[in-house]
Length: 61
Image: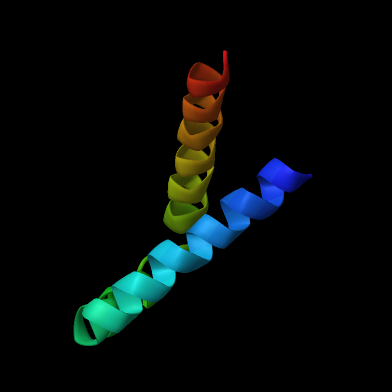
């Protein structure tokens, strides 16, 4: 559970940094994401999650 909390905290750090450094770019990215069909976003999210799981597995073995 400690590893999960650390990973979640790192996500917040990375996203917070991006919004602090590039607020207009993040607004444009969010506007573009709103125009993408839900099925495409779902597939991209699933692919990103799978890649993340594989990366964690590779690093932790």
